[in-house]
Image (cartoon, rainbow, N blue to C red; front, top):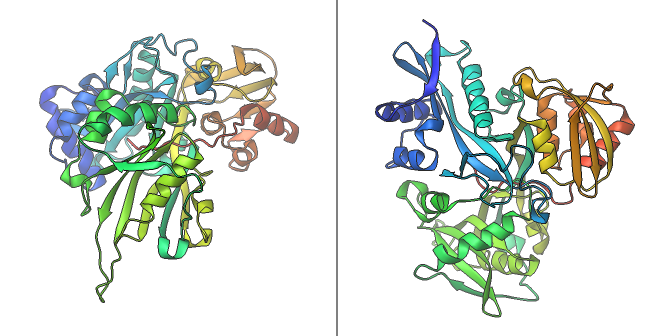
Length: 435
């Protein structure tokens, strides 16, 4: 009997959670299955079965991704983009007016250790692609536990992250010249103020995705003990200017003392959102100067973040660059026409796509006045690329030369330069939340 891959039914959910966590070495947390059901829906939760035994897992979040040009209104729809009847962050959404490109977020991928190298992962990824196409999603994104696995399925590293930690007694974040008013959130202030502040912020940077009310409630406002890892409950500080909210920071406090009873606690930053540099500067200064907690750690900053340059000694900030969001284009025409373009010109590109053949072929891209027209063509391609290269280029932060070095792209140097002028975007791509 062969391997069957299908959506799970309710009485298979507990086994699904156990198998998924077995692969990652953990265990399901309280209420996790219910949260998955509400955010995703069982119709987008797939499992592989060998006879009656579950041997693989996968889930697909319905996301709305910010891409280059979203803030200018150029990326709300293209082709199947906003006509989709898929979920948006776990909620049914069609042409709902939420800016961004409908995108499938691949998560919870696992294969039982007893069933490796039997094509199960390939089958699960294929089911994910088919499900995304059915939901009108032109893109698929993921956070890779092991990077080499997903390149062969056409995912490219599209948005890096900067992990930062520092002792502010050494880094010395300078006070802002134009401070904002800061106050800890009280009552239901956080639930009322954070979503609109973060939504207008996410439109400024490719790689962010829209958080629905369900996502906010289950992933941001519910504060489970297992999420704290020995630190405090989540705390929120609101920044205001002339009485109006203009930013916020969320964080945890992890108290710690030296052997000589000196304070050495840590601030674990969760999120910093601000309308402009002055706001963010004020928030970082606050986070860096909380009594008894001189150490600050943040798991993910954009690569063009200003934080190191707010310090008297940027060298004292320990920075680690790593890959973040991986992106895969499923519908070349819809995806390329959905984003904005900083450059103008024409490019004939051929996508060699073995893992999703319907996206393969040769396309002529013509970019003008911030938009692009994309059509299939029989012309000789100037640029030949693996789908992973297209995914890496898509958000505008990856040079074509790097893809050529990786062997994912073939083009003359002049064509690579033109590719960078067309695809490049001035704001670095960054995804601020894993899934």
